[in-house]
Length: 243
Image 1 (spheres, one colour):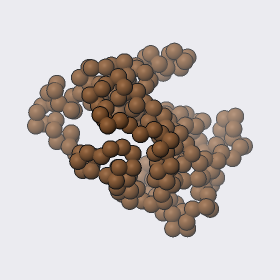
Image 2 (cartoon, one colour):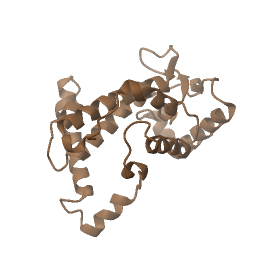
Image 3 (cartoon, one colour):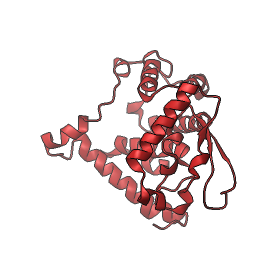
Image 4 (cartoon, one colour):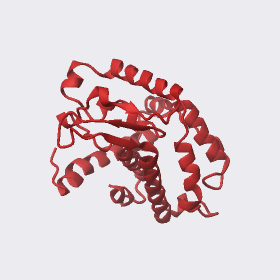
């Protein structure tokens, strides 16, 4: 999948495809063990889900509260009958700092207790992303920092410390932005210091320019279409998976 994204060099949608592939790749380090379609193998014994007691009581209560909120918003009779993806364990796989455990209801591993160390898995994912973006910058010199990059071994400890940070999402985002601005990962530009995410930026762009072919919106949707078709109709059949 990553090689497919890199192969679209110099196409107008290329950076967007790189971003999509990176997002999907990163998700595999949190969502593994669950199938991204409705399947009984996703069923989990709800009372078996618990966070490790190494975490602070306030964080454990926060996670439990979020878990109940998630069930209220997304769960229901239909979701319990046909569980989709990691829905049965809510956001436990998505919290970088979390150690937790659970048991499946069905499948070959139903009697086993599954222990998860999200920090370890996320750190592996970050290393993989580092290699992917390093290769991207190698084949796309315009995206390179002329001052050179920093080796993974130099930045990995800082990445691990950020992953371990126990805090609500907004506080963790702030910690990452501060680390970027401080030059922890790379030589810092003014753009790096001002980095922020606006979820409405492209949403508002579409109606204004009618989603023209040169717009970010159009190129993103084009890249998403290419990625989806490649995964469903080329990559999956290669490994014997037909959907």
